Amino acid sequence: MACACHTLHFPPSLPLHTISLFLLQSSFFLTSHMAIINETKLSISNTEIEELNIEEIDYSNRAQWLRAAVLGANDGLVSIASLMIGIGAVKEDPKAMILSGFAGLVAGACSMAIGEFVSVHSQLDIEVAQLKRESKVEGLADQQSLPNPVQAAMASAMAFSMGAAVPLLAAGFISSYKVRIAVVAAAASLALAVFGCIGALLGRAPILRSGFRVLIGGWAAMAVTFGLMKLFRSGRL
Image (tube, rainbow, N blue to C red; front, side, top):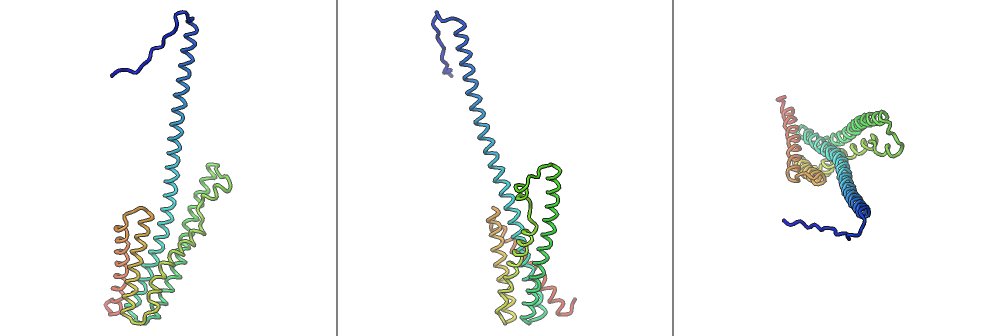
């Protein structure tokens, strides 16, 4: 392979020190030019790495909040639907199912809020202590990055209540016992599938697999509760 090189020709009368100075200046120019190019490439690479790190951090934070919201809604839906179906297995009165479901909604939302508040507040104490040890507490900027226990508690309670409202609304206007049980189970199944698919879509997970997994779990909880309460009604337990 031929080398694309060029030979410099100097006049014979040109002094030697002039030629040396020219070569030195040329070498310095090429070295400086290459350093600028390398520095530019390094700056671009560092910028790309920082952007990737920011996207990764944002996605991680979003995944954490998404996980908490989906878990809260699924907990409310499965807990209240199973509770109402279990009460319906031993008592056909629609008021008993609705009252038990509403009581479960209030108790579950309070429990989720208190548990989330305590958990996030413990995390906040740990992070504040770590920041103080590292002497990096810088006022508002650091405070904005810290978790908010009250906000987390309210979000958890709201998510639980939204999920729990589905079986309550489904059973609130149906007087027939068998139809009421079927409608509660159907509404809960549809909502479970929707919650699972939305969580998978926002979390960039396989949609069908995630939705089916959530649906199977809800069916299992409702079936176990209904079966055990039926055994209690029959006197076998």
